[in-house]
Length: 311
Image (tube, rainbow, N blue to C red; front, side, top):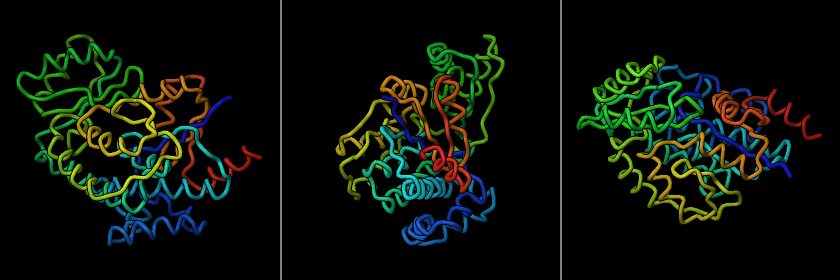
C-alpha cells in the first residue's frame, strides 16, 4: 500500500504575505499565529503577513516565521481534509515543524526554541567570517575530498546533500573560496557562493549547538504519533528520548535530505506533500525520485485541491 509523507520547508522559503490568506479564511490558522505572537511576545503574525524581505531574512525571524506558517497550513489541512502522514520530515529548520506534526514538541515550545536557535546560529560566527556555497554536478565523495584539500587548517565541509548533483558546503570564507577554486579546476564550473548570513551545518556552529542543548533541556518531548526522518542520520525516529540529541547534532551535521527522501521511498512513500511556504522541497524530491507524486500546500487554493483529491 502506498504511503504519504508530509515534508516541511526550511530557511530560504520565506516570503512576505505567507499565511495571511489562510489566517483570513480559517480560524484555526489565525489561532496558530496568535499562539506564536503570545509565545514570542511580539507580532510574528505581522512579520509574516506584511514584513519586509530584509526583516524576514534575519535568521532569528526567519526560523519562527516559516515554522508558524507551516503549522498553520498543517492545522487547516487536518481540519479540512483529515489527511494523515505515514512519515514526516523537514529540511533543517523544517525538522521542528515535522516534530510538531508528530506530537513530539508543542508548537509554543517549538516556536520559542527556533527563535533562540536562529539567534544562536547567527551569533556562533562573526558576520563575514563564514559562508556557504553550492557546488553542482559533483558526487558526494569527490566533494568531500575537495573539502579536505581546501581546508588547510580551516573548516569547510558538506552542509546540505539536497539532491543528486546539488550539494552545499559551509565553512570559513577562505576555505570555501579555496574549495570553489579546486572544484572549478576539476571541471565543476557551477560553483557559487550563497547569500546566507552564516555557515550553517558545519563544525563552526558548535557554539550554537551547545546553547541550543541548554534551551532544549528546559522543554518536554512527547511520544511521537508518526515517525520523523531526522536530518542528522536520515533514519526514522519514533523515540521521544532521541528527539533532543538529534536536534543538537543537526546544528553541526550536514542535512541528509537526498538520503532522507530515498529512505522514505524505500519505506513505501509514493506521495510527498510539502506544507508551508514555497515549493523548494517538491523540486528537490522530483530530482531524487522521478516517480514521486508531489503536492505543495501553502494557501487556500492548495487546501481546496487537497480536498478534491480526497473526495
